[in-house]
Image 1 (cartoon, one colour):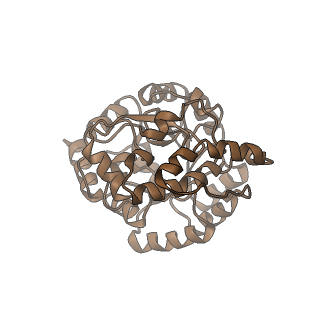
Image 2 (cartoon, helix red, strand yellow; image 1 turned 30 degrees about the vertical axis):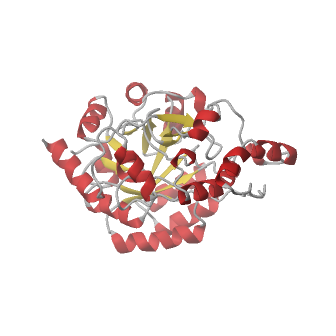
Length: 351
C-alpha cells in the first residue's frame, strides 16, 4: 500500500477520488475518501472565489486529513474572444429541435465570460489544501513556485507522453495519466482532444519509460483488480471517478446515478455537445445526432446553451436528452456509500 504517492501526499492508501467539477463535488464525498485514508478531491473550476472559500469551510469541518482542490488552467476557450454574433445564432439554432421537443425557448447568451482561474488560485492559497491539481494546461511558474512555498503539492493531468514531459519540465509533484477510458472532459492541452486518444494502459507504460515523476492512473478503474493492473504496469496510485460519482455523497442527480447502476456496460461516447469540449458521456439522442466533428459553441458558451435544456429534460424524465458523464467501465458498480467503496477497495487490495 505504500508508494511514492502515499508518501508524497501523506495518505495511507494510493486511492484518489476524481475531482469531478461542474457541480458533482461535495465536502461529504471528499471527507469520506480522505477520512478512510485516501485522497478526497473537490472540483472547483465552475465556482466563484467566494464559493470556493465557503467550500473550504465545509471541508475543514468534515475532515482534518489531506485533500485536493482541482481547477482548470484554461477555463475559457480563446475562440470566444470577438466571436461573431451571426455564428453564435447559427450554431445555437442547430440545437433548437431538442428545445422544441421539451417545449422551451432557446436562451439568450452573452459573450462576456471572463476567466476565473487566477482569482480562484488566490483563494486556494488561502485554504492551503494538501494538493492542488489542475487540468487543461500548466499554471505559471509563479503559481507553481508559490504552491511549493506554501507546501502544497501540485498534480497535473496528461493525455499524452508529450503533455507528461511538459508537466515534468514544470516540476509538478505528480502526473495523472488520463486514459481514453475516463469519464468527463478530456483534459488535453498540447494537441486537440481528438488527437490525444491514448488508452490508460499504454499511457502508463509510456510515462513510466520516459518520466521520473510519480504517476496516478485514471480511466476505467472501478475495483481492486483495475487498481492492481494499473499499479503492476507502473502507476504509483489510481484515481476513480465514476465509481465515486454514483455514491450517495456525490451531488450528481439521482437519475444520473440510477441510470449507471441500472445499466451495466452502458454505451458511452466522446462528444462536445454538452460543453463545447470533448468529454466521455453516456450515449443519448443528442450525442447520436450531433456528429463527432460537428462545430458547436466555444466553452463555456455551449455549457450555458445546454443548461436550461438539461434542467427541462430532467424535470420531464427525458433521459435521452440529458448528457450523463461516465467512464467506459460501469460493469461492477455496486457501492452506494463512498465509505463502503473505500473499505471494499482496501480489503480487496490487501487480499
